[in-house]
Figure 1: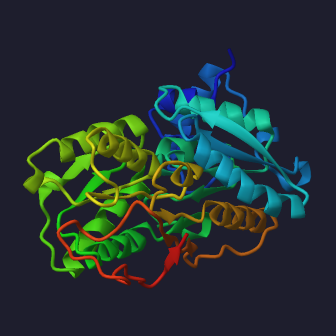
Figure 2: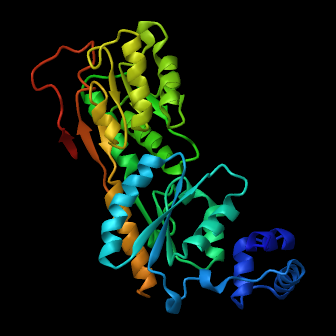
Length: 356
């Protein structure tokens, strides 16, 4: 099997990026490091693949969309937004699935990008948070853009939404409905941007003068099953200790919370309100329909494609922040807290709130 740049990096004891710099004759590499890498290249008989470097004279007019196999809905939403923008520029999208838990992830990414012959790469979470992925693509000298990374340091190649602010606003909306015991299901810690949703929940509690009760916070993993497990922890307690509202970090977990509430004979929203995040198709298919936060995934994808196309065209990097706001979608799964007297018009309409 031909040796890859990953093999060279491991043999030389350096990063993939350093090997790439040596191959591309970057002058800032220290002589002793350059010599070590060159010895590894010679010993392993490694031959860089020039066709994978996205050179201007060798364009394929293909963009690779890399996504984790567990995030099918997210990937199709990204594809919907990316296709329209790419087609207008005469580019096509090639979808490449990856398993972010695989030990061979770096090799898999390099292989997928090479096989796609892509001029540029779009990364979706959680791949967009993994340095092993970005370093692998950098080693191929191919431009890439990250969608919804946890950190927004390289703004010229990342697009995100305002997770933290929108979740603070949703928490405030629940408090305005009289909810003082608001439970929260944290999302998968491997998805860094999802952690901003928990921070937004904390911000919302603070702005409303509500104290954090750690017994109302449970760790989830973005799946329906983890939503069920988390909701059981929150609800299988004495009624006085139950939350009157549960805010889940995504719609899958919120639907799991709905399942538990129904199984316990709790009325939604009469006994408990339930909120999700994403506004996936699932949000409108469950009963009652979920109040949620609509993440502008197709618009984020279109913006990501535009950044990538600008890079491929040789335009100066745009270092401004590319943040597309989410919007609150109020549906039937939320209502006044059960201990609050209901009045017509008691449901608040806050800034950014949309009725569905």
